Length: 521
Ligand code: AMP
Ligand code: MG
Image (cartoon, rainbow, N blue to C red; front, side, top):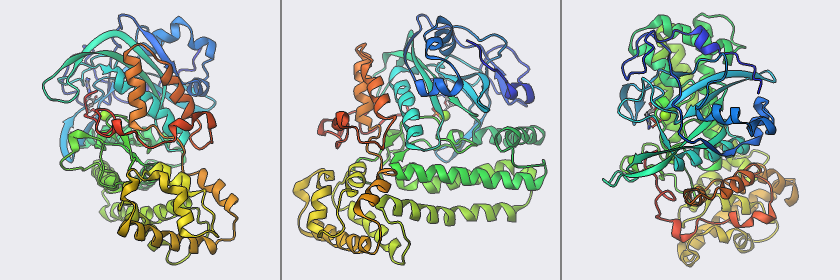
C-alpha cells in the first residue's frame, strides 16, 4: 500500500516536548506524539468503499494485513508519526479548560487527487489528553459514527468521513445509562478522515493560555492549507478567515435543519474549523417534527442542543471562536459585524432552504407566513419529518386539500388524533399551500423531482442504527453494510428498500439507543 504522506500539521506546529504518554496539561504545543495501542485481535467489520476510493486505496489493498493493522493501530505506516491534538472547549456552555484528543490519534495526512486527508483513529488508546477515561470506544457508538458520517456525506451535508470500522478484540467497561450498572462491552476503532480535524477548541486553548505566538501559528497554518484563497497573514486576512468559518458553520447548520439532524453535543470542542459535522456521539434524527427535541439524555433538562436551538448555539460557539482569535485582530467592530451577519444570513438561507423543501421555486411575499404556518401545523399532531416532506412531493396542485392530506397521512404517528382542530389546521395549511403552488409555473412532475433532491427518503433513524448494533453484538454484521449501501443513495427511490422508508416503529419509541442516548461511548 503506497500512500502519499504529507504530515504538514506535525511538521509546522509546535510539538509537545515530553515524549512519555502521561496525562497532563500540555503547554505551548498544538499536539503530542502518541503511538496507538496494539489491539489484541483486530478485525475489520466494514470499510467505506467510497472513502477508500477518495484516498486512493484499492479494494484489494483494503483486504491486506497491512491495511487492517494500520486502521486498527496494530502497525504504524512507515515514516509517519502519529499524534493527538491539544484543544480546550466550552462544554454545555461552561469553560472546561484543556480537553484534547483523549482517544483520537491522527495517523498521518495524505494527499490524493489534490485533496488532503487526515486519517484519525478513534478509540485507539490513551493519550496525554485522556483525563480520567480509558482512550477506548465501544462498538455501538463506533457503528453509529461510521454509518452516520458516511450517510451525512451522501446527504450532501459537510462532514468528517469514516474509512473503516473494526473490532479490537478487547473489552471495555461502560455504564450506558449512567445508573450504576456498568458492564463489559466490545471495543472498536473507527478510522475517521477529514481534510483536518481542527476544532474551535484548538484555537481556544492558546487564547486561554495567552499564547498569542502559537495562536497565530495555528491560524496561519489553517489559512495556508484550508483557506488558501485568503492571502497574507495580517488582521484583514484573519477577519476574512473568521467570516468564512462563520459562513461554513452556517451552511452546515442549514443542512442539519434540512435533513432533521440533531448533533446533540455542540460543545466548542466539537465544532470543526472547516464547518464539518464532527464527533458523532448522542446524535439523532427528528422523527416526529419537534424543534424542542434532543437525543442527548445528558442534556435532557436544559435541552441546550435541541434541534431548534442549533443555529443559536452555533452562533454562541462562533462568539467563543471570536474571543479566541481576538488577540490577532483586536477590532471589535469588524468582528461584531461578522457575528451580526449570522442571524440575517441564517434567516435568509433557512427561508430558501424551506422553499426548496416545499418545492416553491419563485419567491413571493407571504412565503414566510406559509413556512411559519407549516412549522406550527406540524406540531399539532406528531408528524414524521422525513416521511412528510418526501410524500409532500406526491401531491397534485389542482386537487383539493383532502386529497393532498391523503398523500401525507402516513406521516402521522397517531392517525386517530387527526380530527377536530388538528384537521382544520391541516386543511387550512394545505389550502394556502395548494393556492401557492397554483402560482408556480412548473408541473407536478418537475416540482417532485426538485423536492426529492432535497428531501431525503432515507436517513439513519436511531432505531435503524440500533438494529445494526443489536445484530453486531450477536456477531452478525450484515446490516451494517445493508444500511451503508442504503444510505449511499438517500434521495433515490429504492423499491427493494421500501421497508426503511417508514415511521419509527412503536417498540423503538422509548428504547435505549432508539429515542435517547447518553454520552457513554
Ligand atoms: P466528546 O463529548 O465525545 O466530544 O468528548 C469530550 C472529551 O472527552 C474529548 O476530549 C474526548 O477526547 C474525551 N473522551 C471521551 N471519551 C473518552 C474516552 N473513552 N477516553 C478518553 N477520552 C475520552
Ligand atoms: Mg469531542
